[in-house]
Image 1: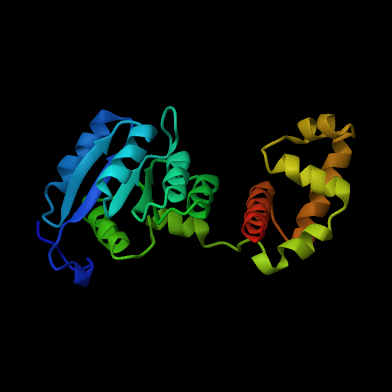
Image 2 (image 1 turned 45 degrees about the horizontal axis):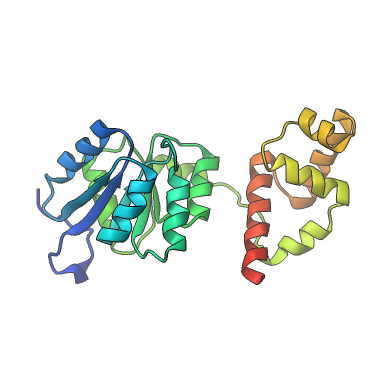
Length: 230
């Protein structure tokens, strides 16, 4: 198949250099064989683990790296963060079966240039690779639908909203954002479970959030903003 429209016009026919990071050998081979059908994409390396993936990307410096989210050892998010910390300019795309809103936000907040699901049609998949290599951010259609929802408050209002919470509400949010249940929060803070429910309700109301997932994302944004200001 030829290099259909959608690639970077400044590449002058140079193939998109790609690294595939996935701990399932059959899937890696399948992706490599699929992309071999397109003359504008070249798989320069495969990696069977997160650690191998980091080494492959830093060694080959490809245009794009496809990284599985859930791998034994280092997972995809850890690989993503390690490569960003190392100063890699490769466009990093999560390729996964997970359509979890939490996983999507975690990847994008960690610097991913795309989030694609493994059940995509081949031509659409290759089109997305061209788009991300050209500098775009790519999402599977189903992922885009999940993100088309109201987002947490802007960074400008983070500190103000945090200050509006009582000390106990802040402690509750810290625990809830780590996935703690009301029962676990109650035990950790030495209060009744019914009191925890009240605190969670007040936190969501004050921050104008709808659920615990949005609260976790909100707190992550706050911490990220604090790190940048430090």
